[in-house]
Amino acid sequence: MGNRIQRFCAQLIPPRKYILLAGVEGSGKTTVLFGPRLKPGWEQHHIEPTLGYNYEELRIDNNLLAVFDTPGKESLYPIVKSLTDNIYFGAIVFVFSISKEPMKYIEAKRKIRFLASEPSLKQCALAVIANISIDIEAQFKQVPFLTRALGLDELKSIDAQKKKLFVFDAKYSPKETEKVWRWIADTLDE
Ligand SMILES: Nc1nc2c(ncn2[C@@H]2O[C@H](COP(=O)(O)OP(=O)(O)OP(=O)(O)O)[C@@H](O)[C@H]2O)c(=O)[nH]1
Ligand SMILES: [Mg+2]
Image (cartoon, rainbow, N blue to C red; front, side, top):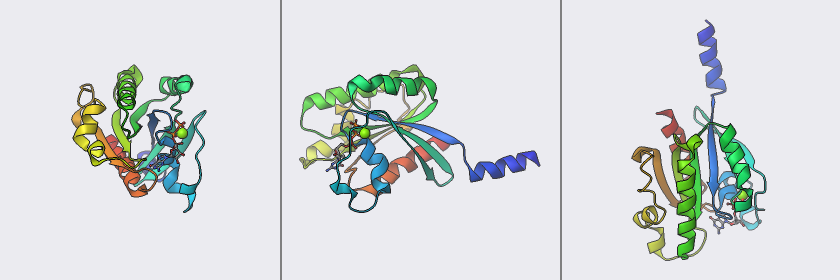
């Protein structure tokens, strides 16, 4: 009887799965989290840089994703660190803003590798969003190019089925953002 009540309650309020939303400064993390949930016309408004962190719970079918949107500014990294030290994250969503500047790829690659090697994040699934936030040639949007440039194949500590690259414009493709949350929910269910 007790078990049945527990199962029933778990369906009403499924256990939270904690997600770390991270990335370089201004890459579109807050846009990814809140954009699809705002009223039409929000795209015209400026989003302030995140100085602490944002928290949002997303219900995806029978999953409750508890997402922490962190600041990209390097000097605010202690905020990310205090979250990763205290919360058992199941997945990282890393947002990268596609660019023509080689340095941007080097910086993002370094950050991804750094996060993936954090002892508290080692078991995490990894979704990388390559955000097409500027008008840019097709070659920069190719999955093989981005996979190589961001060093995703080199991350041997994460199984192939637990990492995935998504390429879309975060501001104007809310359905694509939804696919990322769904992939995470499915991956963490396995
Ligand atoms: N055109 C376009 N602009 C975008 C897109 N994503 C983000 N932006 C803009 O880029 C700016 C930064 O976006 P944020 O979502 O605040 O970036 P962030 O990664 O949360 O930034 P920090 O919190 O400072 O690390 C905002 O003015 C957004 O409107 C996109 O997909 N397309
Ligand atoms: Mg932000």
